[in-house]
Length: 502
Image (cartoon, rainbow, N blue to C red):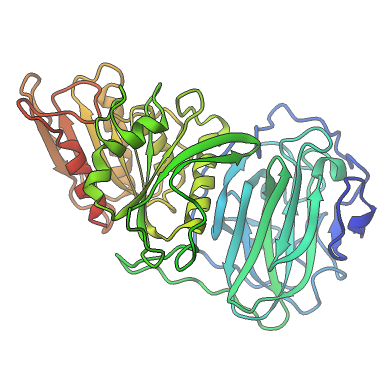
């Protein structure tokens, strides 16, 4: 194993501390530095689902794995045992004799995976997934001293200075402006051993930021030789409030349009909070996505020639100052979610809102019409561990579905003769989520064409806390359909009743 000082590298990296590094070759290392034909557009663009397995790590000696890039005696202190290991951006996996848990405890960032062959390691599977963006991990542990092994790889960039990112552990800099490509090249494993740090607040915090492009990490191993232990967090009681970091603090984000940089792209969203906002009250949070050709302002204000007459699909008035709303702005007036870019936007907005305002992290919802419903479905697939539920109006799988196996509360409304997105596409999403939620086979009748009515069905036998509610109506492509002879749509009331039960 080759030891290197960060100071000796060529990427302009500022030294924070003396670390043991593995895979420290000359720029490009043994890799050609050229992207493989199967390389995914990771870090800047692509994402995949993350699982939320809670299996615990097995104990291990100070030798972290048998891979050719692992640390030896000069790295992890002698006598240390493995406290916890996670596969960033991926599912649970066993590699090098270590059981890595599925990605969890992250706030912000997006998962991604590749089928590329990773050089410089015998445990390449660990490096074929990543979490990228600006984010942090908060791993629950007892107060003690911990050493870490952090695993990295450059899956996306193929030129120097295309990605510069920094890592801190418990507020202490590990490195600043690391350029993985300059250091080891493309698709080559690169590990950093972090000397012991002290945890005093029962949470081991690893924070990743970037000055160019996105931060990235592929795996984390946590060790202790002072008796430190991982603490499995309790499952929240049904209905229990989970206050965000912004609770009890002066708000740092204000109503109106907010600009936000996501992976080097300028994005924006509109924020609207209750007129009587109180930083001691954890509010419900709803993301409302616009339709193809629409915009955030039409969602937030209602009318203006848009598809919804009232703000936030009619939910703002029904919420009566109980809920914070955001209306994200899509690229090209839609939600293609190319390379996970719109999931990354959602993650960044959520990170900003939950740190700048007081929300209840157990009551976060997504809703939208048409393309916006497609984006809400993408969230149901990839962020079921973050979002409590979704409400889809004329939905279809349009924005991808990374994962799509975890349960999530679901409400859907669809016209029986939808001429844009056939109702069969909405039924397909409904049925997938019903299976995930453990619902029994349920007959969901639909109104006859020409009846001018709607029929709503609650699926039976669903897992507690994960209901499925489906409304079919005699109508076309419309998020706020009215029954014949009615002046107001029934859909906002149904959607709000569904959301507000939590």
